[in-house]
Amino acid sequence: MDSLVALPLDDRTREQFEWLADEVQEAGGEATVWVGQLTGRAQERQLVARMNAAVTADYELVIEAAEAGGGQRTLSRLRRSMRDIRARDYFSPPERQRAERAVERLAQLTAARP
Image (cartoon, rainbow, N blue to C red; front, side):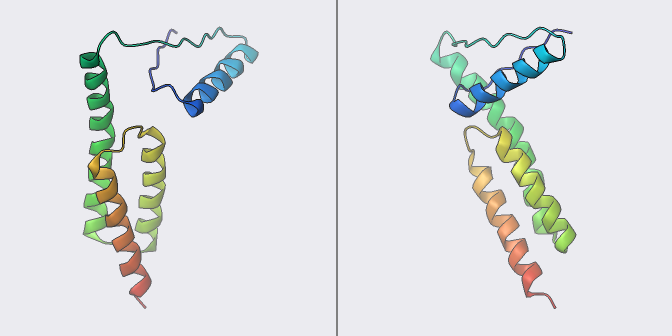
């Protein structure tokens, strides 16, 4: 099976890809890490927009769930969701801060309950 993954180049992603390539090779597979460059600003803007759209949708789900309320279990689930989304969030759309505030408000409400 062939695959291609594109992520912004930073120390974290490069290290993760190199680690993954090593794991694939140790398991008997083939893996190559390539560093590519988009050919223009328009392509870069498109890629950033697509990546932001994906995490924005997830942040909006967190906001909805946090605003719906819930107890400690809901809060724990939303905190895990935020951690997972932030791991894929390279450009921090405005919804990230809104989701963080919504989860914090839910945490305050949960802490205030007897």
